[in-house]
Every structure is written in C-alpha cells, then in structure tokens.
Length: 261
Length: 358
Image 1 (cartoon, rainbow over the protein chains, first blue to last red):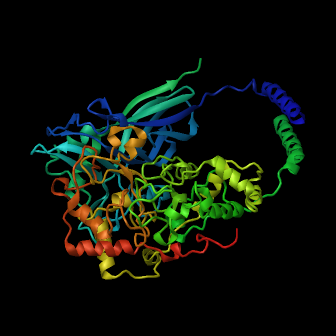
Image 2 (cartoon, chains in turn brown, yellow):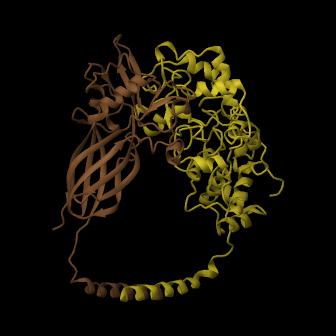
Image 3 (cartoon, each protein chain N blue to C red):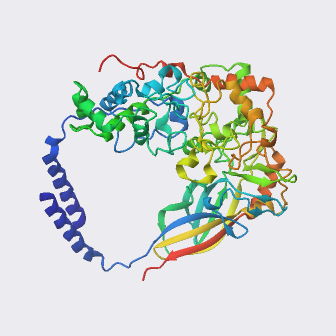
C-alpha cells in the first residue's frame, strides 16, 4: 500500500512539474527508420513471393528467388549543414527471415532536408576478416582463400536453363578476388550509394530503400544465367560485372511521415 | 530540479520498501557462467541465456541428475542419456532411437552440443521447439520416446529423498512443475560446450594440420569443390553450422517432410536443420534419419548422390549430374578435415558425465 501511495504522489508531482516547461518552444523531432524492400521490375518481393519461378530477367530466363540476404553499411543521414548522423554501421537484411528489414536510427532528427547514403557490402576498410561476431554466427564470412571478409549478398533460387531444366543458381557478391589461394589480389567491389535528398518531418519518418532485383541482370551487362549461375565467388570477372550491374540497383522509395496535429 | 529531487526521494523510498519481501526469498542459488572457449569469445556472440532461467550451480546440478534419471520415462527404463549418449557425442549410434515400449523413433538423435550458442532458436531437426526449455517437453511425453507425463514426474520428484531440496535450492519452489523440470534440464544442456578439437587448437597456434587435413579444409572452403561452408560455417564460425534449414537433395519425395511438417509451408518440405560438424567422429550415423553410416557415404552423397526435388536448396550444385564429383583424394581429405573437428575432451568431460551423488 505504501508503494502505491508513493507512486501516486510521484505521478501527481511529475504532472505538476510539467508546467515548468510551458514557455519552451516545442520541437518535434522525428524517429527515423530505414525500411529495406525489394522488387523485381516493380513487383514487391518478400518471403511470400519466394520459390515461385515467376520472374523473367532481361536475357529471358525465368527464375525464382529462394533466399535473399544482403549487407548494407555506413548508413548515414546528412543535414543541410553537412552534419552526418550514422544510423547504422551495418545491417544484414534477410528477406526470408524478415530480419534486418527495418533499421531504426539510434537518434532523433529535427525536421528538414537530408541526404541519405549507404554502401552495399563493406568497404575494404571495414571488410575485416572475422571482425563481426553476429555476422560470423550467421555464416556470412568469405573463406580466407577468397580474401576473407564478408559476403555482400547471397541471392539464390532456381532458373530454367536453355535445356529446359530447373537449375539452381547462386548469385553471390563478394569483394572480387583474383587468383584465389594464399595471396589473392583483391578489388573492392562494394558500392557507394547516394540516394538523394529527402524530407524528415513529423514524429515518425520511415524511409524506404528499394532493391530492384532486375537491375542485377540488366544494366549495363545483360546477364546470361546459362553462363553465370554458379560458383561465382571465385570468378573475378563475374564479381566485377556484378559491381557494374549493382550501380543502379538501389533507389529511394517512399518517405512516409506521421504528422502530428 | 524539482523533478530530480522528487525522483531521488522516491527511488530511496522504493529501495527501502523492497526489504519488506526479503524474508520470502529463501535460498539464493549460486550464479554460474557458461565455460566459453577462447575462440568462441573471439568470434561469436555470447551464449543465449534466458532472463527467466539464469544459469546457477544448483540448477545445473539438478538438470544433470534429471538428464541421467531413468525415472523420467514411463517404465523407468530410459533417461535422456539413453538416446543422447556421452560417448556418442551425446547422440545415438542407432539409426533411430528406441522408445520405452520398443517403438522406433523417426529420426536420428541430434547431438547435444553448443546449443547455448543457437541464436536463432528453432531447436530440433525441424525447428519445432522455440527454446531449449521447450525442446525438453516432447521427448519426455512422446509415446515413441519416454512416454511419461509431467504429473508422474513431479510426483516422483516429490517422493524422492533429495529432489525436493534440490528444486527448492535451484528455483525456490516447493511445488515442482513442468517449468522447473525443463528449466533445470535446459541449464545442464547449455553447459555442454565443445570447443577443444584439433582444429580449434590449430587456429590457436597449438596444433598443426596434416597435409591431408589442410587439403580437406581447402575442399571445404572451395565453392567449386566442396562448398560446405555456406551451410556449415568456416573457421570464423566455430559452431560449424548456420542453424537454419535446408533440403540437401536426399530424396525426390518425402516420407518425412521435416521443417515443412512443422510450419505447414510446402516450400519447406524436406528441409532439416544443418547439424554442427563438431564431433562427427562420435556421432554416426548421419543425416536426420541416420541413413549414412559413415562420413565417406555423406561425402559421396554431396559428390554424386544429389537428387532433385521442388524444394531442393539452391546451394546444392550440379544436381542434374548428382553433385560436384569430387576426386577420391579430395573426398578422403575432406573426411580427414571433418574428423579434426572432433573434441575428445567433450565426451570425457566429468561435468557432463553421470555422477554418483544424487
């Protein structure tokens, strides 16, 4: 009983104290989240769309998606004055498990114009072998003969090959490694992404970042899955081509704000 | 300032009020830590310990006693250890385990190892248990396993000379329920950590791989040969499993639909959890149904025995020709490497073996 009485008194006191702040100008700061979504030429893709061979790439191959995991790093919002706020050092998006798809910023933001940038994969400076315990446990690492570090993306599924046979593909992107083995030559194939300017307002802002999967097969290189469907990690040229096709994969989607009345 | 003073006063008063209940706390069990190998500390997140079931010395000791107590079964004939045998890597060398009535099970007993480091939950071959506590319910009550009831077990516990005090000290209860039984078992199983194989010592600079083992590791990590690492981890993942579910091309149709039977999702038919590759020297036979008696058979399966089904995992390569066709040398070397992940100190650790004291 003593506790209840005390808590009641405390509540009343807090409510009374609120009057102290009435003269301050209210600033509504926004809780900001990044929502990672995926689509294939406009059709949204979630785990619900997995496994069905219902997409056709630029080269005409029909394919499904059964697993899609990718890593985004250095996720930064920059205000008009050039001040950067790091929303996340990295986030592993696992579409099948619906994990990592919504990244909430650890800080709030004043209303205004911001630019959003991030990186697909890790830059060389961050792509340190075995450095991230959660990624190690997720078996996200790249073997040492391929230079170590971490995958950028694992996109897998089935496609119908030129002989009309359902065939597994593994479109895995990593830091390109030439001459795998004891001393491979490495090329940073992560992709810096500038998603442009957006407006933050209201108490909550959700910023959509969309991966258009079709781009991986399309631009500038028309990808032939019959030739490049498997064992792509040690294929240096394939990794370079993936990097080229990845340049326009990510786009700024909807920016939704909750405006308080 | 007013707020700060008020808050401080309230906190002080609340803290002093807390003493009203001290008399009801009773025995306070001794906190215990998971013995985490150095490589685990360096490479992966900490063990997962539920907030409502912290590790304690009393809880672990109680769980160990329960683990080896045949009175947990209907006719007092088998214990947990009957199908999770220490010398068999806490697995079962029989293709499937045999329940109290002589009824065969449907799957090979999963090894109990490093389960405290399963960050994703989903225990069992099909992921049907969300937590390790929950995992212990089915084997105890299943008609083809121990076929007991928790009512019988709690009655047995209450009639025992020592269990009541052990439960009281571990959980501060006098009325034992399923919750405390499964919590104690889970605490004990969480202590079962294996991280001292030859390969672990190699990574720590304390052992050298043979040329055969080294080539086996190369095969394991080579996407054009073994490509084992995508499902079973690599030297940076000392669990040697991804703890997720795959259809690894065993069958064209499924008598046991695995993960799909639990979730009801046809896309998951034929999927089973990747087991850890630790302690394979002790855990034969292999696969969810124990169909392969030797590691050589396992390697042959991935090399030339894969068969297509609609849900086959996309990581399975060259399925139309049965697999990646490893050379005989690579096969043998891969097996040599896999055996270097076995940890004799684990199966001989007195902390995990039955003790004479109740």
